[in-house]
Image (cartoon, rainbow, N blue to C red):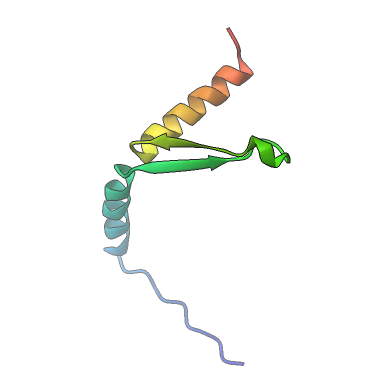
Length: 68
């Protein structure tokens, strides 16, 4: 069996990846959820960006752990 050579990342690859992530961060995002084993709990949430989805999901998680 032949061993594959690992492709070595070039120094500029990280910059290109970061630029790609910045472009993707402003994309429409749909989050699919199923909070329990029950299929009836399947739902989705719709956001304007990845960062907005993360912010709102973390906020909901914090609120569920520390109700007012």
